[in-house]
Structures are given as C-alpha cells and as structure tokens.
Length: 129
View (cartoon, rainbow, N blue to C red):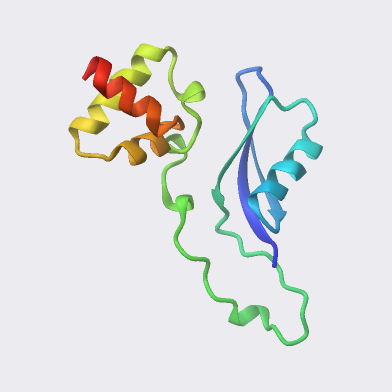
C-alpha cells in the first residue's frame, strides 16, 4: 500500500520546495521527488502526510480507513528541516545543540531535531559543552 510522504526538496537557491509524494517506502519517495525536481541537490523526507492515500480495492471501504499513526508529521516544520536551512552559521547550530542538551534531550533526539548525526552531537558536546 502506498503512503503519502511530505518531502522537502532543496535546489541550492535558498528556497526549498515542500511537496507530497505517494510511494511504497521512503526510498521510492526520494526517487519520485528526484524525478519531479531534476535540479534538486538535497531531498529530505519530513514525515508521513496527514492525508491518507486512496485504496483501490473492492473489499476496502475508504470510509473505514484507520487513522495514520502519529509520526513526525505532528512536529513543527521548523524542527524537521535540515540544519543547513535553519541556521545561518555553524556556531548557531552548536549553540542550539548545547541548549537542547542542557534541557535534557538525548544525543539522538538532538541529532534528529537538528538534522545532523548523533556522532556530531557527541563531538560538539564534548568539545564545546
């Protein structure tokens, strides 16, 4: 069954495009987004869309579709964008990382929020924290 993914496509011009793509999985969603935006430099999956995909099966009544489980779609968009689009420079990114850690977030949660690797988070906390 296909799912509806929210996708952020960055072409390097500072104006990312947010779109929805129906695909079986995340890899296919990225491939479809790439085919729709051939000049894309980066493509990020932001989460599943609130919109439910249509099901074409005679035994499946669309009125009885189960709601999509809560996902990253419930998180504010600015927390899901890649860090390169959120921060003007690396120092601001490091400062935010340290602030989130002081608020008690785990390394993995900080990495997901900032769109960076958990190893980077660990290194920054060790170096600057």
